[in-house]
Length: 552
Image 1 (cartoon, one colour):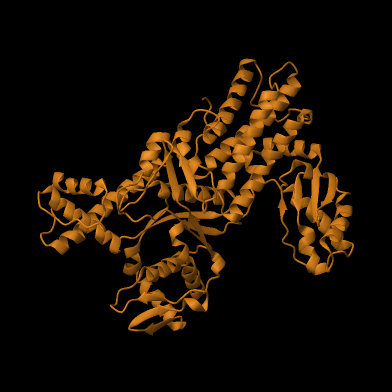
Image 2: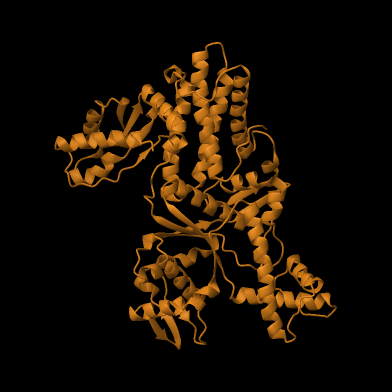
């Protein structure tokens, strides 16, 4: 693994400052190193002076000036300066960037993978759509975010589990059963009162027709028939959901049934734990959870006055089950309409004796599909929605996944269907994939010219002195920082943004620079650069589940 050079520089500076008595040995520092937006501010910037200020009781700018004097002696820095009220900017030497490129070329792309997780166990629960209808594009966005986040955490040192929670026993499943029952009666020619709160989509009729076509035996009594059809219809829909997810490149380690919580007895175990700890209490013939002990939220019902357990009860039990399976960190990915549910679940995690930081909740904001310049509405109940399958069939899996990751997950996303189908640089996924294919084309031309493209380790990387080449090396090695930041902040969209920025710089370099020329030493050095660049682009595309074509 490539040790982060900026952190190494700061560490050296801190150690020297400690030995000189400038920083107390017992002060723990949690500073940030980031890339300045303006290139003129250097390769990296740190806020360490602001972190030290309250400990040393000095102004950040005075601390920064002292630290800069220490850093000027580093053999890694070309220049160091103080910016603003106390930020420290530093520029690395060109020779260091060249050596870093060679190190990645020699050790492989894995040299850029940071160890963030230290083998901790993480369970990511995502999609978890009720099997009451096909997956729409909102579910697709959640699937892409969850899958890429799982890939990302695996790549950065976590042990990751992927899980889909199936509500197989709730009111919505029963509503599906009643919807199917009434459509079945309709198909048989009976007049029925099909209420608006039932599922309206054509898929319900299709399931009802299947009952007839396959001569499925349905119980005679209405209630028994509804119960049977609820199970039958949800099973068919769940099979379709699994097929859609598989074709979308998303697989799960486990499909967890809500009913299994009751069968295993963990729901009763959970209630007993809460009662024993005084966190569950009775009021108005119901059992309540003391949410207010932990969060600024009202107390919530666990068992209603009629004896029925709420969804909240099974959710607490489900999270207890996750912890009992030795997961250190739980990540739940929900639709943005579940925002109000977060405080009570965090409270329940604390009630179970865990740190609320052990639970991470990502919200997936709504997706608006733009087709022919107009938004397409979505509602599973009304049947007016665009399915994930329809979008995949129209634009392909690659574009579908890439577009879902073009904004932060909790920001509203407009999915431009027409743009996703374009085969031009206006289309972001085409733009990134084309860079990979273009590099492959350069290597094909090099091989046709008799150049050995397989053994480039001995290429003279010190010949890479053009500004755009050094800039590309900086961005290649920045992949490690992107992976680390994405993993720590649970923000997979950072990888997509990085790829677009990286290939933009490559296309600019390619349009200005002739890679294959008469100077074989320079040619091999540039091929070394492009080989590593190709691997980074390919690795990033693989991370987000998008193909890296060799020809386009």
